[in-house]
Image: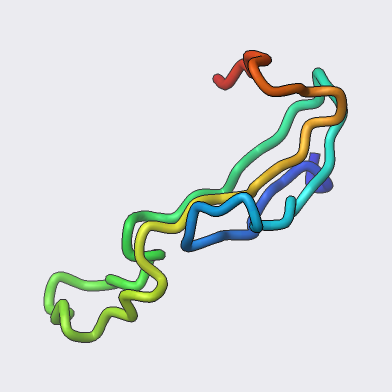
Length: 77
């Protein structure tokens, strides 16, 4: 399953983001996600000024699903 672990992140939503993985319909993927600050906060004592806000709100992916077309429904569990 390690080959289907997605750990690439984007920080903007854009059609220009290149897929990090291509998969076939029916394949199982595992997405490693980060919190809204990209796991930069590591203690309660850390100041908000120490955060790199260019790394805020990461999204894992994107993924290209072979055969999927606009309007198709993808199942996520």
